[in-house]
Image (tube, rainbow, N blue to C red; front, side, top):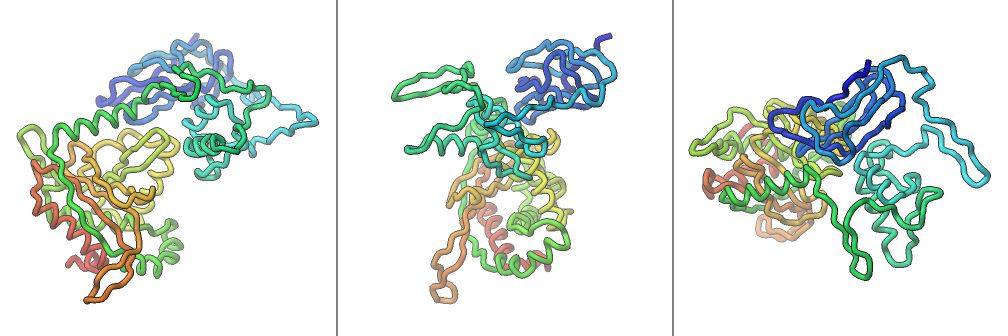
Length: 408
């Protein structure tokens, strides 16, 4: 008797999704919990796994179709699967090519796999920068960009492929001024919607300051090896800024609050969102109850979020909510920017590139590693005085880390 394969039940905040890829085709054997398909929503990518061993019978939904919560998308016939049934057939090497073993097969992020297929590239020629050499979307794009430069050769394609990339079903205009039209992903569409919402509904202002990073850099240089050896994670700058933000949020509760209609909600907890770039776009995983976390716990959770963001493994709960956000454009080289609020939060801190600059200390000009910081805030709830003092509290905490330990 055939078994229905259904989409998982979506949370209330997610109404529908798009089936972006089938990993199995009709007639193929599957094992229990093996990945069958991926469904993209405006928040995360959901996986559809096989409910038990058997053979995939029929696909009721095609790649690119819209699906809803608990919709039946395929059927399978249950049954025992021989141990050798799911193994890839052995390839026979020829005189001109050798076959890579399973250990040599490149590991691909879903977005990278899609891009490689669109351009019919040989994944073995692309250097992966993800964990354990995993190839990310950015790696594929960098490979394509390099091939497009004058004097470089065309990207190598899979054996037996045509000289031109296969059609992807997108509108393309060839000639001296080529262009192509692609559908916006659900996540990108949701990001666009929320950014426009923030601009239209909040009175956004931004205040700036600069921070001397020398004290933190000295402290980090002194203890980073012991810290990593004891806690198994590197000591970064973000944990110092999060600790400074927590102190500032406790002093100025309006910045940890949000507006709901004509009411102000003062949150008695501190859920800090950390903006992370991913192949699908910007996501903001949440450090729940950040005030209860040690610096080591903060660094470990941020590292875990950053890694899983690259592979689309963040859960919906991990990127939902938050009372305050931090974004670090400095890792991309940004010297100064005005971050946009993440509704319904009332403020967001922007960190930037550390750059050596001449500054005056004790009436002398010295060279210091300086960072510009920006606080964008909703002026409907936060006055300029509180915003400036909030940023000053962060500056004082980072420039004198002992203050945070002594709470003075």
